Length: 422
Ligand code: HAM
Image (tube, rainbow, N blue to C red; front, top):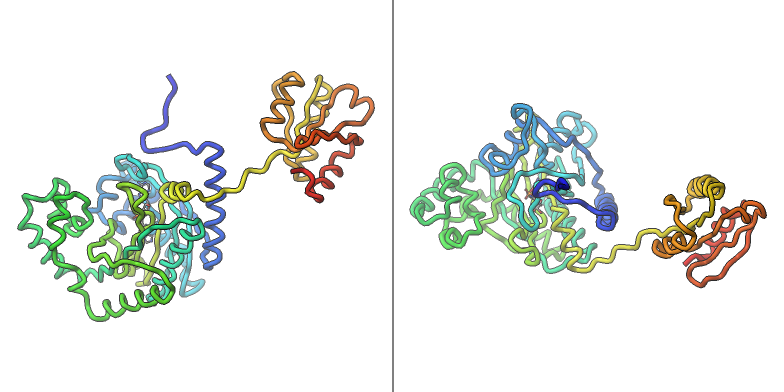
């Protein structure tokens, strides 16, 4: 029996892998345009990093981590904590008071797999560390919207909220708990469990029985200080000025504990139950929590699989893969040895070419050249080796040009220059 891939993982076969790499390179260009620089961190970190940042009572840390070596290490379930760890450990704050970083990396969460939800998935994301100015909040959201528009993804919704500071939340949490507790028997099973440990998360529930109760729950917004509200209004007015449409969702709470102040999500109706494409927000207290100086920061991450399925839905056009410019058809061992050396030289000059490695007949080699859409084919056998001449056959029109066998490189350079290969 063939061993299958683990649940919640997927293979990227060559065609999809090519499209993904293309999308990644375009996303890198956009991050560069906004002056964000790439950071890469290890695949696993000390488990304590995620406990201290994401929070012990969150679903991610309490149920979804791939933890090993007596719980010492965990595969990273997200990148914000590793980025801040790296920022502090490498003293990046010495380089500039504002550090703008991006990443494209695989993440691991032991979740129940379903459409759009994987146990190994990929995120691209950005973190701007050092500024508490609403301008950077606006830039972060504009950046996400810019990426979506560059990939022609439409009909998404930007949901915006401000969840204040832990102090502002304290009084609210008491009110929220008292309110929800009145309905504790009517809450969903999951929400019943969350009531004691993390009542804020109940606001995020999609269960219809919970939604009915949440509709009339007290709003955190009504417990925010004037300064927080003013900041939130500034972010909104900057976004409106930039022509970005958003919706305020007073019950948008994120599933990670480090958030403060501005939070946002971008959702799409085209994705089914797992409708969040981007999630992000401020985490002004995280650097301090992880042992550094208090440093305001904001970021987002986007699930690549969900993003990619929207790219496909909106029929984003990925350019075609480069085709081979030359397929060498060989006849006999001597010709194969010659061809092996020849295509090695041609590849050194940057020409994508191919030959036969299966000892196939000339006819099936020709078929293969057609199948891979090679621009030219050339047959090499004893005659060609003796005479030093070969026929370069242009596959698009069947025209043949006789050239000196040592002249293939120049011939291809010339053909490429004049664009005659198509
Ligand atoms: P998050 O909301 O946990 O936030 O994840 C961000 C995005 O990653 C989600 O909106 C979704 O598109 C994708 N995602 C999450 N889990 C899965 C999964 N199991 N399968 C497929 N896609 C998934 C964070 O990770 C924060 N670190 C974002 C952030 C950066 N906040 C500030 N800076």
